[in-house]
Amino acid sequence: MAPPSNVSTDSDAVATIDLGPHFEPIAFTPGRFAAAVQRSLQGTHAAQRLREHSTASFVLDLAADGGATACRGWRYRFTSDGPKVHTDDRFDDQQGYRGRHVARDGLIEVTLTGDDTVCPTVRASAFELRRTPTVTLRCVLAAPRDHAALTTPVLLCQWVDVATDEARAQLVPELAPDGWMLLGRGGGLRISVSGKPPGAHVGPDTQVEVAAAPAPVGPDAWQTPF
Image 1 (tube, rainbow, N blue to C red):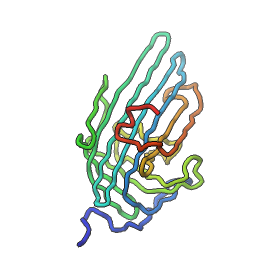
Image 2: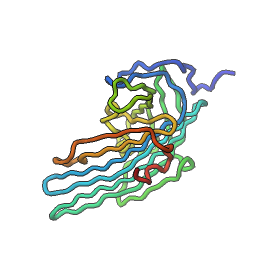
Image 3: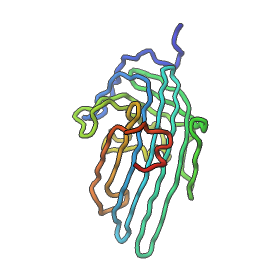
Image 4: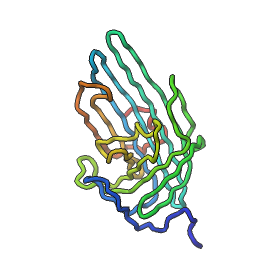
């Protein structure tokens, strides 16, 4: 019996894509990939003291039959305190997705549509976040090469033509090529980021720590600080 038309048969193909000096594409195999990113940032802008405390998670299941599910979550707290201005921005946001993935020449294209049966939709915000109902990811399995923090293969995923807010919390440019999300196979990765927040002129240098998650990163990982 022939495989479904949307399931690639080039399982041994390796993508010919430039991922920079610290990642080398390898052949893709389906599986579960996940990461949780926690930011604890502080700094100053003029007389304002800026603080961000946030946790984001992304869990992606790519099945052997071409099916795909994902759950994205983000808890965000940002305060700006000064002599005259005091702001407190906060939200909780979760979205489930369902779709398909297909391999082409070692690159994996994942198309996802919002589906709250994968994980419940959460919208708790004083303002409206920009979201898109369909997410397309371009992914590649990659092995670290002389990487300062990683030694085992990871899934790198680029958000395609997304001008909304979903991708921002998932990106850690200190670890992955610019614009690419980094996910660990199986139980996933736990990533901690400290330093000064966007907009701060003065603050500590950025520090990033990454490790295999001691327990699998679940769909609700964004709800609990490390």
